[in-house]
Length: 328
Image 1 (spheres, rainbow, N blue to C red):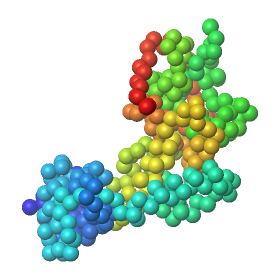
Image 2 (image 1 turned 90 degrees about the vertical axis):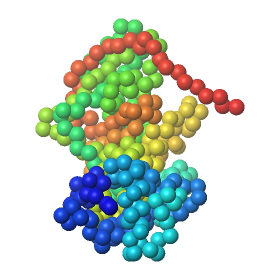
Image 3 (image 1 turned 120 degrees about the horizontal axis):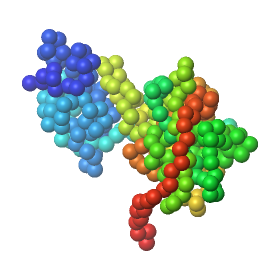
Image 4 (image 1 turned 30 degrees about the vertical axis):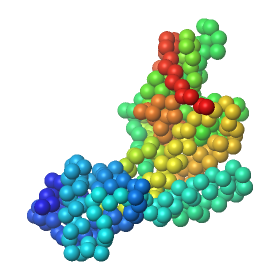
């Protein structure tokens, strides 16, 4: 028997149950849409586990297996030749967003830089997928920015901790050369990693807050950020498509660039997306996962005047963790 407490979502509890009894017709309609993004494939993950990974709908994995198994036994679902343990992968409809992103990256790097064709990405929901990930930051949030002292006894003031002047702004993951954005981190340790601080370096760290009366509308690109929960009106295939596209963009934002890579080329796709977010979506910046400290995030603000540096302190790097892997 499927119980109301099997579902985590209060919205689904209210929509699928009448006086705590599951409505079979509503449940079948909902689950048909839920199963649509997946196709059977021997290399895949069991259906119930994949649904838990994607949506976290149920209280635990055992409950997911039981509920999905019972739903698939309903007469209305008899044409579906699957069960809760059937291995599945995403359909081509869902994976198409990844193909479109790869084609766009190749195009802007090697074919057309200033008149880019966004048709495929917009058809696949670029604008909708990004807009659904908006996060509003208020004055309670604190961010950090680090600068390495270039010489002994060099001192940085609060005014010196902001974004570089446009005339000397070098290209970054989010900004083209000559356009200045402010890069911040969610914690002090991460900002030291991001500036590649070395052992015994003196590092000045500024603490930033949102100015009074301001709020930051940011697009959260951190992978697995569930910006949209399921309802009876949801189209799971579209949501997954948006999520995969957003996660692919996030991955490229977070991928480290080695000194041997051509950063001016490799950064082009993410620079374009950030400009799209700034000018088309009218947002204030982005949040993306740090490439150097995976449990932390970086913030890019398009207009540094929305925040203020409240204090600056000097630190000395006393230790560094180095990890390596055998290449050949």
